[in-house]
Image (cartoon, rainbow, N blue to C red):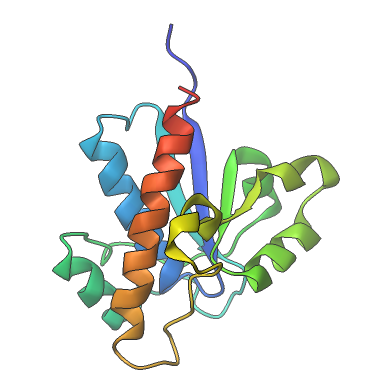
Length: 160
């Protein structure tokens, strides 16, 4: 019997750095595991500033260096419908989590998770926003995203 797919939505502030990177990394892991019929992946931002824009060129470059294509993605803002639709709503940092908690109905709050909670071994609690930093911020964020993606995928696989 086929179970319905798990639906995962990655969230950051503008949906041009961390969350599209997480979408690309996680989608690639899902495909590599042959789980694309069980896990749906998307990303969005809490803010509206970049709606319709592609990811930051630095995020595209960092992801491409790891074999992850995110250049075809477009930024969008999370909606109330997303809060209903997705099973896992994954915030990159505590500010994202607070924003998500504000728009979620009480019954939806259990869907919201801090991404690095799925990678406690990294010793960091939040994926830092590389947007205003130097070039090193993007590979660092990507490395954290990859580790948390492994943990999240294992968590979901245990429920399939």
